[in-house]
Length: 168
Image (cartoon, rainbow, N blue to C red; front, side):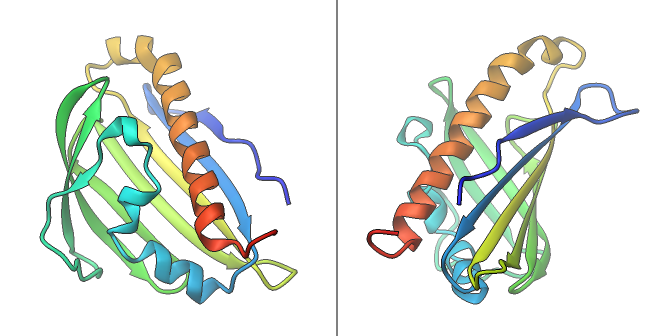
């Protein structure tokens, strides 16, 4: 199955706010796919090396509503600390991480997992984000959009490599 395109939409009534939507299919059961995403260490594996992504929170990270996770990333080569809150935790269906501190004015990432008709799993990502320094941040949106597209495409490729059976 071919992945759906990565879509960015403006949020009506919220100037400078966008929603990114991405979807992919994996030939694995939902519980197994959710387990992979529930291990915070796997975030390093599915993030492009150029972002120099590192988890700062001592592991293992016990995922649950209220869990705080600290990271370090590089945004255009500049080190940035990022803190997220797991605001929703509903295994094996969904979870939400919200940026409390980081490069965006707003970042709410909803991860949904659903059964596919063929017995595999469909992963749906929805990220509601706003760039800093609004309204000037909107001028940077085309660049940020390309960067996010690249990150999510890389993520889809790595997840597929790690979770798909050989030859799938």
